[in-house]
Length: 151
Image 1 (cartoon, rainbow, N blue to C red):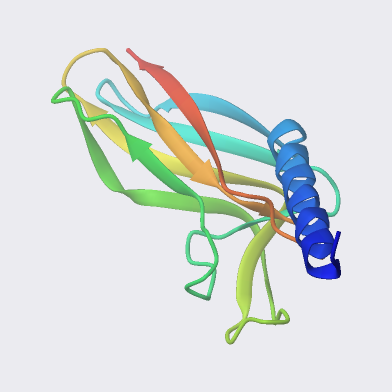
Image 2: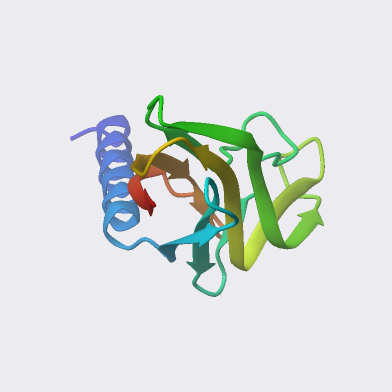
């Protein structure tokens, strides 16, 4: 076997093992909470806790190549989003190798909060996507489904 072919095979195996690790060992724990503001308005809260040494980006991470958390709500005429998803946590801003601008991210934990107004009781569903990194690498983005009962 020639050297180029050996390097290609080792590279592919390494990529597959990193991808498999990222798929099976998510260093985040997501929980979901609903807070009733009044009879028709709610806050839906996405809590994320990260294992030590990992971070998740802000929704405005500071550079275009970074993958920020995003939240997609399934369309339903029984609700209206009020404003945009806000972040609550201790955001860090640091210059990172390979990035032109300072990067905004969270370690430890952060809450992502969306206000919602309903016209009748519903189960609000959708999917959120995020990417987790440590100081050496970023894992492939992950998607998770969510569901909130708003009554």
